[in-house]
Amino acid sequence: MTVATVPAPPAGTGKNPAPRSGRAARARRNLTSPWASVVALGIGLIWSVPTLGLFVTSFRARKDISQTGWWDALKPQNWGQFSLNNYQTVLSGGGTSDLSDYFINSVVMTLPAVVIPIFLALLAAYAFAWIPFRGSNILFVGLFALQVVPIQVAMVPLLRSYVDMGLNASFWVLWLSHAMFGLPLATFLLHNFMKDIPRSLVEAARVDGAGHVTIFFKVIAPLMVPAVASFAIFQFLWVWNDLLVALAFGGNTPDLAPITARLADMAGSLGDRWHVLSAGAFVAMIVPVAVFLALQRYFVRGLLAGSVKG
Image (cartoon, rainbow, N blue to C red; front, side, top):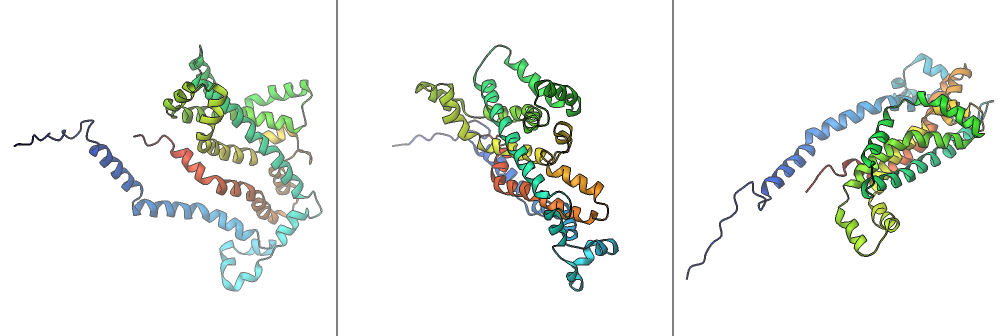
């Protein structure tokens, strides 16, 4: 009795996934090679040197900063130069406005300016990705083209509109402005991520009788967390570090000015207290660094989403 044998399919056909898996394995080995890790570590160290210098300077007195470089303060015999006087001056105001007031202004300005464009962009991205309508492609291209419009071009018309509506000199002006400037990029990024969601998930939800609202909140929204976190980090850093929009629409009043405006005033008005700028810069960095560390895993997922298929 003879047993018929079935020849193995030739390499390169769709029935043999070895070539694809081999290419994927080689790509992973290249990305995780020791040399790549060494280069990445070297770039990270070089990038961190200025931040280290600023951090060391924030604990030194003005006289020491003027006479020696920050690297000299790292020598054991010079450790006595370090003190918290600069931070005490910054946080207490040092005879001027308290920095904590501007810190609170930045928090109040940033959080809604991040949430509003994300919510609107999610709705717009869902409409472009899963609701077919006439002219959607043209409208999406037009929305994407808004990214190239300089912010400075839109400032004067927007300011006139705010004054006519009686919204000038309020947090609403800052929230709406940052939301409008961030909405095109948010819609573009979230739409591209949303298009990679398998259509079978949406079709299965429709078969079960789910409408657009149920599909959006129960199927799409949970899968969009990495993409939302990625844009949230970008938008948060942009709004927190912004000075131009805050000064143009909110003025430089203590009730609306962010912490970046206070740092600019310290650089131009304190005169003999310029040495406290390094301490003020680190106070301003606390929240962005905390946000990035808290969302970094979602940030990496959002960047890598859709980069590997199959």
